[in-house]
Image 1: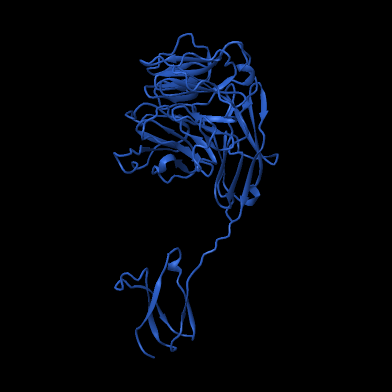
Image 2 (image 1 turned 180 degrees about the vertical axis):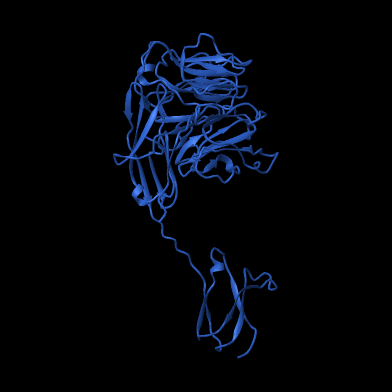
Length: 449
């Protein structure tokens, strides 16, 4: 039997370096918002928002923050949505343009807490494209490493995906092997399919996107395993690269933000998290506070999942803290060798992989342990019904066994097989009929004994 492959992979999206609980507990808001376009942007940050760990910019007028307790706070220039959302908890990621919130149980929720769609469960990641277009659709990663979209939009048949990104023209997927795959967006009413998938990068550990896709890499922002980014002029001290409609921002490990067309304020404090919207930027900031251990939002997601033997499953931890962060996964308190990144992906799962999975996240200040996520690997029993045809004829006679799928066209008889009678009666099993709705058979003699 082939030994199951254990793959561990790091996702670094727009949520890369975050403030911890202690870092966020200040007397003033720890989120800064500044405009980057002609619209004013939601600079009216709630004065009591002092414990944010992640921010998500919408297109023009709305901004969201996830607090250390997994609750969501929103504010906007229009007055809706506004304040702390009582209907959402354990939020780990979101898309501000679509008002979709990924929770630690793997479900995608609306602002009112309802499930966005019945099939949006067992999700580990989603795109955070800040631009909403009427024919747009969400892009999601299932726990088995495959892609999913809303509105039944066609997608490439990719496997082992761990993260996705999108801009106005292209879609991107990052695989556990470090490959970045790009394809053109499905344009409803303009094209009937997506463009051919193209490999645009290898040895990558993170992907984001910006703009309209006219750049050499179609607007992809790629961080490589050596810490460099596919933007000229940057060294290997990159914490995150995030994009919006009109530009991108590079976040260094020292908390400095360098932007393209983003009018970064010169007095911006140390930045732990960053998001670029359609016409503004938002950042989680702090200054003058010592490093504290990381904060983990909820359990690794999905918190409970079931997979079949031989399939893949993925767990992702959403940890926030002062970079660099290091990870170590455990199954039933036993250390998993090589599982040292924020995403754990196991291919060719076996029943021995069932159990409770935890992860520790460390930085210079200490270690934080997660609660357990439960994985159940089950066996499957495949039952297939195959037609058994009884042939009663003289021994030595040869027949053509033919079939029709329906009786509407009697001239469309097709050959199943040529059979020579050796026993009486004799049985023939038509494997080619598996999955067919109906078949009608006949025997045509080809010779006499």
